[in-house]
Image (cartoon, rainbow, N blue to C red; front, side, top):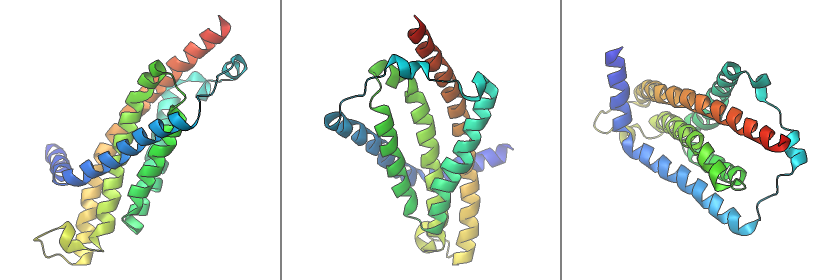
Length: 204
């Protein structure tokens, strides 16, 4: 187990430049979307009727919420939407990261500052997980397109590079899983706390 964790850290460290690139792309796109929409649209007014219509997901059962959020983000948002397209065509994860960041920017811009700060940890953990997922997909996609660039000095064939890239992607996904699990816990706590506040505000 210790050697496996060490190998995961080594792979992540080796792909540090690619991770840094995706971090810049993702979080700068989010910040740009938030700032741009601030100048284009006024924040919507949340009415009491809307507040009273809110319902707790999964009946407010926190354990089911964590499992549901984690599973959806891992298998759909991270793997199917970000990693898998990169395996097919390596530039696609970049496009999907920008798209997701812009969508999140549009969703979060109406929030007042205090509410934005509450959801910010979820944004950071999930966003970082998608950055790692994009890195994994890009590595595998590049392995059979330009193995000599991806694994410099190894002299690998496309098939050998593809197999090695899959191993690297599996180790990178350890970080994806850990980040998304923490994000699911944080998001669940945020949702339950936020909805509780809204209900109290609507009642009192």
